[in-house]
Image (tube, rainbow, N blue to C red):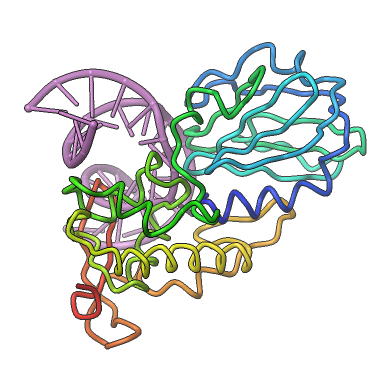
Length: 271
DNA sequence: ATGCGGACCTGTTAGC
DNA sequence: TGCTAACAGGTCCGCA
């Protein structure tokens, strides 16, 4: 479910209800996520006040005076605020009772996500340390991408989805940004000119910011932290539209698999 | 070093 | 209608 816009939408949705609250209790109902949830997590967070919730790539960082709680939503995870007595469901693996009386719940059917406790600087955690720049920050430029792709013969789609190069660009927005930029997903990264990288970088920024503005993409059942569905799905030009007419030229969109991920593009508009 | 396939899971959908 | 196979938002690991 979550790419960067969904994670950011979640963050913005829960911040007003979680930051400045004390965690009264923390329950682990199922610790078997991608990595085992540390058994001492409740002891670490109980009685602590959430000072801030930050995002790095698709990771959320709940900052406390004593350390940080790192959360990743994996492929199917969500964080929701529920009020009071909403019944806990099958895949609600963790919950935090806040001093306000609200309850934050972590749900993740596929359990590809993670919840860690990190002492010290969370940005130096092994999972975060070698991540590339944030796509929406000024340091993500065409110069940077051009430089990083010299000598790389991997398809450009694989490169933009590589979190060591740039974080937060998942399968949906990689497809969308490449379509908007008019670049074929299979084109080798090292044969793309600086000028075309200029276009691509702008398209990545545009696609991601637009998706955030619209509250993330609704596929299946995505809902942000406030329970409101996202509205970006109706804006998708290629993702999920293989075989259907290109919105620009009308030719049938091609569909191939790249890194085991469905890749959709227009062989007429993208070169 | 880079690039790729496999693995981790469950739920939903497509196809026979 | 019912069963099975394929596929789904991510990303780490290990082997070429």
